[in-house]
Length: 129
Image 1 (cartoon, rainbow, N blue to C red):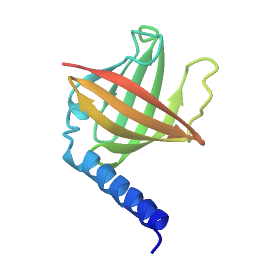
Image 2 (image 1 turned 180 degrees about the horizontal axis):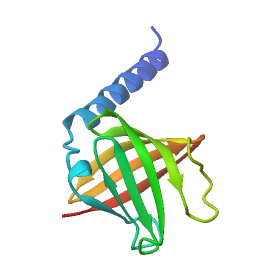
Image 3 (image 1 turned 90 degrees about the vertical axis):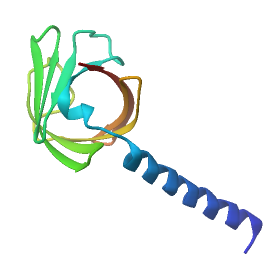
Image 4 (image 1 turned 60 degrees about the vertical axis):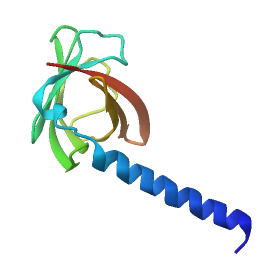
């Protein structure tokens, strides 16, 4: 095998191992126990509450909301099926599915990646106990 091919295979093997370890070794139970405040958007009043099967998200001091059903794929990953949205000019509609994957949790900060309709972004949430 050529040296370049070996390096590519090694890279993919290590990436797969690191990804698997990240999601298996984390305790994501805080996602279902506490409110989570957005840190990566301008609205500092915005927060979410997750449960086993639903999500409630509030913006602008509770004036606007997003409600969704949750389908957990593992302890740190879920699909969020939007059921209602009353945020003006919100780009997503009921029925759209957002995939959320927690990357890490450090010092009560949750780092995640969300993907919906081909759009992805990273974000941060603070655990509010």
